[in-house]
Image (cartoon, rainbow, N blue to C red; front, side, top):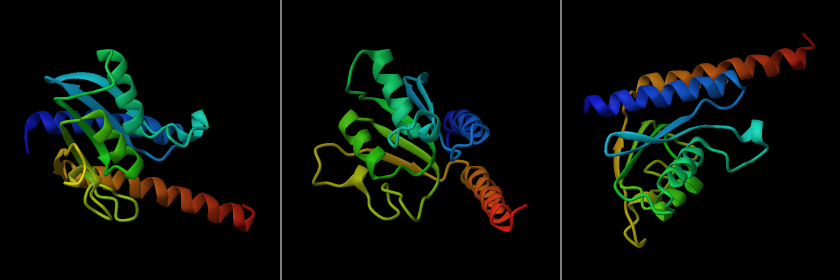
Length: 160
């Protein structure tokens, strides 16, 4: 694992923490080109009333604007949680070069867990993938968030 990958994943974790503070599922993403950050994102589905406002989507949109290009070759996307099928498809269409993610997502992960869109040889672009960077920290943040959310729902049911 490269030091730069760890540094960028820590930055993605900072975005995930902001998302959690905003009541969103804590996922953060950072898009880089030549070791320069060009896009930053975090989940904002609830805040923006937008089901597509995933961390990856937000970082990629910002990166495309920064480069004035809808294609993002030679970029690397760092994300705290394995991307879903929507985000994996976006990455393929964007021509992202490399994906680095922290926690695997056994329920909706589309980069190796339930499907593997980013490495599907039938598609016109494949993405290099590095899994498990700061996996424990990324998983812990998600686990804590959902533990708190379950407790809140339980309290509401009990009328507390």
